[in-house]
Length: 242
Image (cartoon, rainbow, N blue to C red; front, side):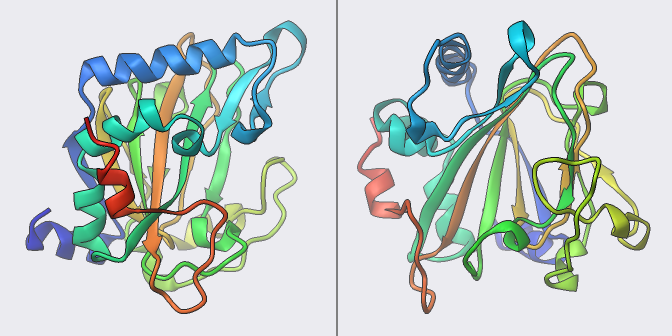
């Protein structure tokens, strides 16, 4: 990651990275996620969430993926250059602390109200950022992904209850004050990074195709008072490379 790109990331609060995930690795991930979606039982370690009910019930979110399947995800995370990216943005003390899949199923995938990641975390994570990788096409037509450039510069904004959004408190009441909205139009395998304070969200998926992505969150493991349930150092991640 060049100095110019890091400067742009710091200024805008996000940066589109282009293609990062190869098709064969993307296919491996999708097979894994499809198997879980069709499974009668998923390990509680994935902390699964669902959209829909009855026969239409499908996975919407999975957590702790790297910690549940290091053999699959470790090499892939190395191949997309995640450890090098984290070292460039945070430094050698960067650690992975979260790896999740966001599966917005066709026809029933619910919207995610605008929010800041840091505002929803139970701990403070200075320097943290998210690496979000598209596993399918991502556009407003299938629920998409959007954000508000430079919104990270406002610091933590008070989140309040949004009756239309069941998952967490949100910034729906603030969108008119956040400036222009940026829609991410991503091809499968393309990625974007954003700051922990960057306001972002997504729409409902009313299309006939799933909208899938995965996110890896890095933070500064050397920050005072740092603690997280799951921690993997850059050395640990690199040791999982093929």
